[in-house]
Amino acid sequence: MAKYKIAWMPGDGVGNEVMEATRVVLDALKFDAEYIPADIGWEFWCKEGNPLPDRTIEALKGTDCALFGAITSKPREEALEELDPSLRDKGLSYFSPIVKLRQLFNLHTNLRPCKAYPGNPLNYRDDIDIVVFRENTEGAYSGIEWFPLPEKIATAMADPEVGHPDRMKRWFDKGLDNVAVSTRVMSRQGCESICRQSFEYAKKYGRKSVTLVEKPNVLRETGGLMTRVFRDVAKGYPGIEAWEANIDAICMWMIKNPQDYDVLVAENMFGDIVSDLCAGLVGGLGFASAANIGDNYAVFEPTHGSAPKYDGKNVVNPVAMILTAKMMLDWLGEKKDAERLEAAVASLISENTVGTYDVKKVRAGQPGANSTMEVAQAIAAKL
Image 1: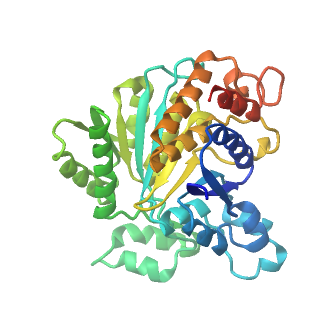
Image 2: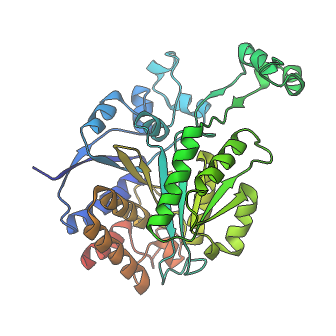
Image 3: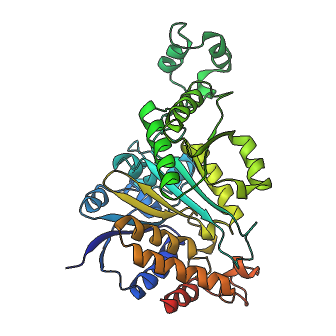
């Protein structure tokens, strides 16, 4: 019997290719695991009206953790157009399966390391080593939205005791059928959890600072709550500098002085934004790994999407997915294998002889670049 059971979820598009490439590397490591196939993604929305079938949720409950490739998501109207005609009158609505997974399994922490490996020609600088802690179940991605805005909700928002009647008048004037509302819901518990984890990480790994990324001057209640909690938590870590930056300002400072930052912490949407910026500083999404971590379960995924235009061409960079597998090994306690895997990736990057089109700076699919699988095989050979 294998030591671990890993839910295997390639998802959509290039997710299948980068997962196949990662399997080559895990096999070279002789990682002792049984891989349990699990259905997720656009195909199952189109055929079944559910991108995260109940059978997948049950399958995940019998595994130690999950590896996930990529997902395709489209706006509501386009999603309905691609739904099987027999299901279109069933009142179904598309939802992001990865967001639902995060909420179902309470995967409260999204961890995104952004590290510049020497030799990568796409690095902004070689001395960047930033870790982003993103709250993963609340914030602007809570999934509580309306369109059109129901009168009951609008009336409650206009109630002088609980809402903002002066601000709501203009929306009534526009007609509620023309108004969409998305909520940003944050709890003290969620804010404290993600802030404390960021400081604990900084303490464990000798990081000098933790920076809160927020916008409390405009988002006064939700941003204000996060800021107050961050300051309270910071008091328990006197040896670590606690910095604060607005989301717009840090996008400038990260370009000017990225080497100044160690650990960033943010709510869901701001964490999503700033971690992609960080990825751009260390080579792009082809080098950006991520982990969705809860108290008892974790789902590991690269931060890139399904890239439909490259689907089936075997040209995309698998390093992000392979480094994601490294994060899985760390979480499982397989530290030596995680170190070996990262060393192999770093060695390949430092040599700068094997790389996909993004590294070689040629057009995808053109001569001069290595394929997805060739990069994986080169890493596997180093193991």
